[in-house]
Image 1 (cartoon, rainbow, N blue to C red):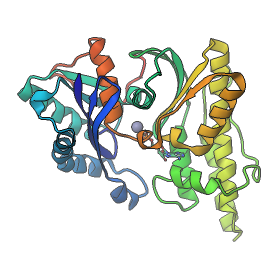
Image 2 (image 1 turned 135 degrees about the vertical axis):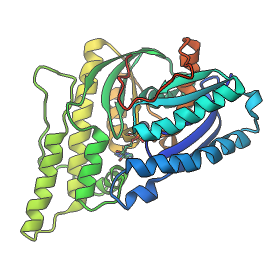
Image 3 (image 1 turned 90 degrees about the vertical axis):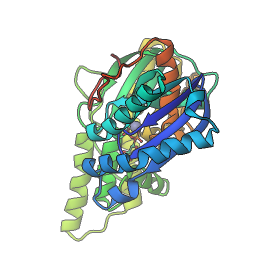
Image 4 (image 1 turned 180 degrees about the vertical axis):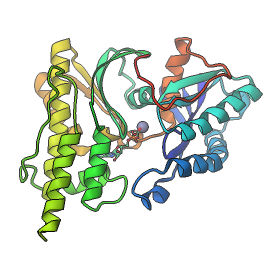
Length: 335
Ligand code: KG4
Ligand code: ZN
């Protein structure tokens, strides 16, 4: 079954053709990051406009690279939640129009379910059930994936998402948007024990996370140093911050896996590209004889191939949309 998928939830306009949920036939991503960099973050109105301009060409290119015409497809998949509402609406309306004109069934896909499905594209042997740490720019969740379309959030951040914390800390250190990747690179050269940073806990919620205290601690440290004219060792600070975020994530993830008896662990979302998170999770799983999966770097960030993969399983579960489908800025993954 060949599905053409569309993704436009944030600052990437993407289209892909995916076969049977597991094989990428084509995948095209038009990134707007260079333009948003000028403002230090995504400007929603600019994102919507750029999606409008790019979507036709991106979809056309995905079909061309797959050497397919619309009549050779079996279904359409589209991200409809969560994300920037104006950005999501571009993809949703384009997909609805295409569905109406071709008669192809339309499959609505939750963006974070797509991030999890990126793993199905890279690991043919991976099947639910497993425990997944979904860490992106907007979300940090620990999710029980009991089946392809059955999941339960058992822990989440009470304030900032991990990616957001990385980006804000990186921005204060003078790195360009999105700073997470720059901070990760610089951290490789620094001493992770140079700075003692807080590791916030959420009372009575062993799997919940909190990053705002940690983020504020780093920002205060930087501002205090600059007021005194002291130059901070940025690589050491990056390494210490990265260690605090990763250990905080990992502690909850491992505890949840132990308590709920999951021995297959999966990372998903933009932050799953983090070198330390990948290394440390793999180490801890190896120690315990557990399996660990994470997407290749090219599939960690936003793309439409992951949406095409999840669309296959949503279609199989009978989750189809009508032309009344609307975009939603917020929506839980375990609906
Ligand atoms: O999943 P994603 O591409 O978009 C959302 O759905 O939010 O995640 C983007 C987030 C950004 O905050 C970015 O800084 C972060 O993922 N990120 C990283 C790394 N690569 C991307 N954070 C830490 N280390 C990285 N290597
Ligand atoms: Zn994403």
